[in-house]
Image (cartoon, rainbow, N blue to C red):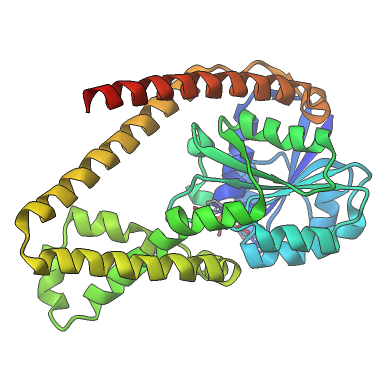
Amino acid sequence: MARIAIIGLGLIGGSLGLALKQSRLRDVELVGYSRSRKTREKARRAGAIDTIAPDPASAVRDAAIVIIATPILTIRQMMEEIAPALPQDCTVTDVGSTKADVMRWAEEILPQHVSFVGGHPMAGKEQTGIDAAEAGLFEGKTYCIVPSPTARETAVNSVVGLAGLVKAVPVYMDAEEHDSYVAAVSHLPLVVSTALFSLARDSLAWPEMSQLASSGFRDVTRLASGSPEMSHDICRTNRENLVHWLNRMAQELLKYRDLIQGGDDEELLKAFARIQLERDVFIARGAQRREERAAATEPGISITDLLVGDWAGRRAREMMKGLEQESRRKDKRNGDHGRKR
Ligand code: NAD
């Protein structure tokens, strides 16, 4: 029986526990620790973990894999607490929404006899805590894998295997690349959502206006209901990239203002029509990819397979084959498109 330790049993940590329990992973004990006793108890009752540890160090003792799923700025503190207790050849990973600082902390704090492989499942929702956790949260979603330069290959394969077990799709990248991309597609939407709500809420007409605010306003401001701690930690640890994209967003808004003010109605219609088409294609491709991923069934997997990484190697080869097929399909589509034009 091998041990996987999860530290932080909220939305992401709890969902990982539930998903791993529902996966075909055998011979494994899930040990969990979270700051609040109530959360720890709830996680065990919900079946997200088998055993509660009294503190982070006890959770990781004898663990083959450790998953840190606390708020980003707490990850550093967790690393400091678990470092002396980490066993030889242990694989440590995290789920933090930003990666450059986390990778630096791991290099600074974790002992050389363990491997750190950063992780970020691109899945979530605005509710937080163990009550919001669900086994299907990661299904079909991208799981960013950011190996440290000193991580053993088997450790990288183990984290790729974990991502596969929770039905996510692992994608390798480096920390800087990760942080710059998520700044645009994840962190900017968070700030835009918050800014829109605050703008409307601060209007003197809000009491009347709010009665008219319907699904469009709800959709665009959904992320403003997320955890303030998570938003704060994201802004603190991805400041430069976020500021870059906020400046670009301000310019983009001014572009639309000029278009609306300029009075060229044909140009205005064309701008909306082009973006509608491009977004529709993006949404349709995402749905198609999710269907393809859901259809690919996972084989049964033992903890030994996971730790040795053979299974992950097989999966990586399958993924490469899938990517090549997708790329051939894309080339064909582009060719067709070119001819039509
Ligand atoms: P959450 O608030 O639901 O869960 C965090 C958990 O960590 C809680 O159970 C809390 O008790 C615990 N915790 C906090 N401080 C602790 C400490 N000092 N010691 C031990 N436990 C502690 O938050 P979440 O949404 O699960 O986010 C966890 C991590 O996942 C964050 O790093 C976040 O950036 C990342 N993430 C979040 C999302 C999302 O959409 N929510 C998506 C992907 C990644």
